[in-house]
Image (tube, rainbow, N blue to C red; front, top):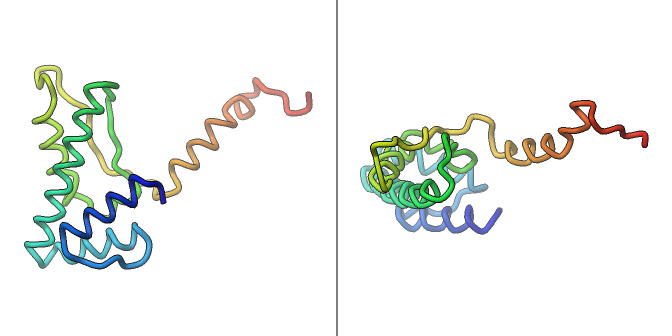
Length: 134
């Protein structure tokens, strides 16, 4: 786990009053299931999602992405995170006239970043512009 994911996991669990249950993704799935029936858990997830949205607003002000994908840990939380984060992101932008990034949930699982990095590293080989026999 990277430091950000560990911190997010700990903050989410503190906000909803639940114990860790396996991997961060399994824990997020357990929180999402509990949020279906427990308004206190749902409110805790929303509070964390709003902080995520505020942070994304800061990042957006610096790098101006067209799309932000919430993957890995966020995917099992689905709309519980997506909607409050998107609302907070929109509210935190310096100018809403220009619109903000499209915020969506990832669909590729927790290995997507590593897969993308590996593909990027092999980009020249796959394109045929790098000869492995030289």
